[in-house]
Image: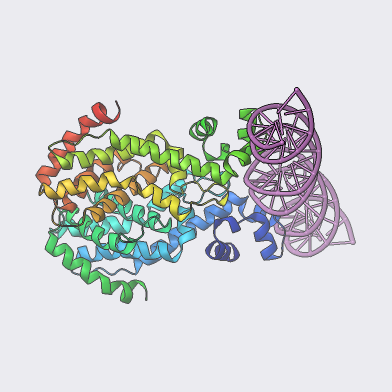
Length: 204
Length: 204
DNA sequence: CTGGTTGCATAACGCTGTTATGTCAAACAT
DNA sequence: ATGTTTGACATAACAGCGTTATGCAACCAG
């Protein structure tokens, strides 16, 4: 698993082959089959590892008196996790289809479990009156899809000057909070406040 | 090209192999190299075809007196195009990495060219006073990344009940317009009005 | 000590993209 | 009209991929 993670992180998805893994581990390709039941099983294990790392990032975000600031920080943590493990993120969401392998329905369900943190935060935003009336789970999905899209295009190097990923991301954070019901002033303040928290809380 | 497009659409990315293509075309694999310089060239040609189809969808959206309604319709057209050509869309944005092939920087630039339609519409929304002060190109990028993320997760079957893709999409359209500066009432009206236009203008 | 089970090395099969070689036909020049 | 040259394509091979059948060797139970 460690070797597979290192190969994926250092050299990308195409380096994650049974033969390469066997050579690197000093064994034969059969080890992959006895331990993971094939490459699909190994990739599945990697994906689970990826969601665990995402959950780790989320768990670093504290609950403060400003739930919108917390929510924005969750978004920043999401992007930070993706940029820290770009190849792993690509595998998690099909950005790299390794040998036609695709996740099962329950694997996808497992991934969506990490959304629970976002749903909880959305609930707090609603209760604080910062978001307009709405479904916390629906709002969480809207934020997720939006940030996921930005991160995906950023990793694919589609976002370049003058609309680089960082600029679009900052503007999007404000727009998403306003779209959820917050005022422009309050959202701008919370987004700004979350900027420093990324270093102190998440990156720490 | 026609055979490649049909193979990709009917059987997905893994069916798009040089040998399969040669068998289907009644020739040898060398034809791929003389005509496209390899599989990379063929995939590149497919991607260009994909962006052309996206542009076709965009061109069907008329400019009306309600620019926000037009903008929402562009979003619907974008999603409609992706759902009509799911495998092609996956290849366009790296959702299916065929043999480690990746687009060049200028290929990505070509893809971004289709954003011009969205930028123009954003400019009209700004001039009409429906969007708050802002950069039309930046707004276009925000809308693009958001809709792209939703479509990507929808094609990956990550969006299931009760937050299915359709429901998240409708809510997101309103939120994005509000996030860009429109009022909730006006945005809701324009989103509702665009719903019927999808059938009459885009699907036609 | 013996019998069974488990883990992995070896080798092979079918698949992939790619390429060197050869052949043949079309196009061009004289 | 004829000789030449260029180009496209078929054939076959190479390296790599995931996967699997076979066999050996180590461990564990009785």
